[in-house]
Image 1 (cartoon, rainbow, N blue to C red):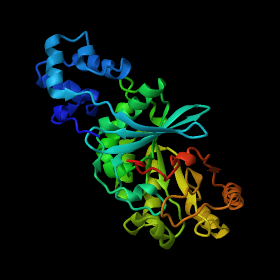
Image 2 (image 1 turned 30 degrees about the vertical axis):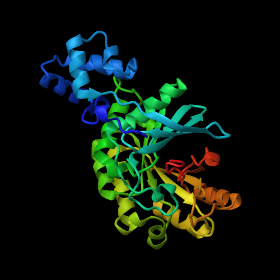
Image 3 (image 1 turned 60 degrees about the horizontal axis):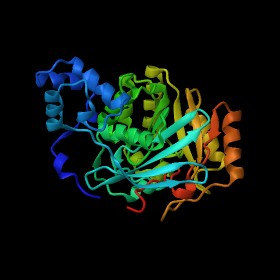
Image 4 (image 1 turned 45 degrees about the vertical axis):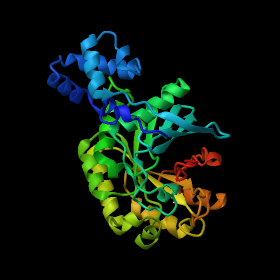
Length: 348
């Protein structure tokens, strides 16, 4: 990977919301409506250079070229799983790389995007734990993952999940701005209800996200039913124990009227027995929620192994029988390490 020295001091124009770009153009002595023209070139016409923006004056195009860059990621590696899932390793043009996963369902294409280069959370079942944290991705770099896959596959993506490398709420401002760019009808025009944000449980940021009232889906990585058990799996629980986390979730539901999805990765002889199911019912009773049961994926040097299919189905059935809607997540991309918890910039 080579660092693009020519553009190192230029701003990625995809980092700007429409309103921010209008303000920037006013500072440049230009009419704000030019921002809408530029947005159309970026997100409708997918212009890769300012020279392509032919309804702008040459003078303005030169100004834009002096100040901004249209960042487009390079594909370092693309893998295709037996089920059709595709994993991209992207060069993000500063000497770093991230992974992004494309999944196809009957309702359309879903993309799992990364929010950070590396991760600070240290969850014991996640391969991203092995990647030292380098930096946050900018809002434009998050958006570019979507655009890069759409360019390569010649498709339009309908659903976005913030479940790739990194903790989305640890990069709160950039993730929220990216959601606005993705959701904007003049941006990528993907509905907020088709966007899901996952978190390991950063309680203060959950309260903050509730105030945004974006109407995206919040996914909570719960994975255990006692603090002792969860802290062993997820160090974040030492700062924000289950009781505080669930209170923040109740507040989120009350403010947004949106159902929360609880992610629960089932590990053999760890959190997959009937007593765990009973405690989970007690914890979630009365909440507007759904439980997504995940057969835990084996990772390099990981201590956990997948629960048996019998235990997984018994766990699901117990939750459903006691008023908690639960489904088992379909496993996609595990043969190319693209499944839940397996992303780690492999082969970099």
